[in-house]
Length: 122
Image (tube, rainbow, N blue to C red; front, side):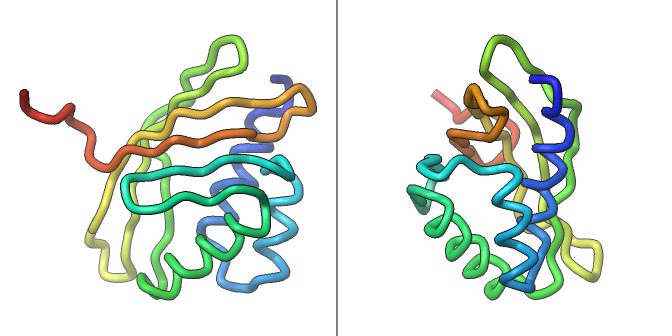
């Protein structure tokens, strides 16, 4: 995972980019052709599907940016990162933890996201 920081930067930049062509270029660096993205309310299979999903999210939250709130925890081909979405006025409407997998070519092949930073109550 030598270029993991570059891949994660491109992935994060894709989540902040409203220009479709620029977002696609970031995903070319970061996301596998057949990668799987899932969060509690959505699923995207493949780069084109994730591109469209990010565009939809950015349309719902104009001016929002995603920021990492933790370092990257990595072992073998797995990663874990915490993040939050910050609006233009500084409010944080959502935060979460993502668990992912990195493929042999260094691109992300899977992100499974959970909203909130606390485990659910039993």
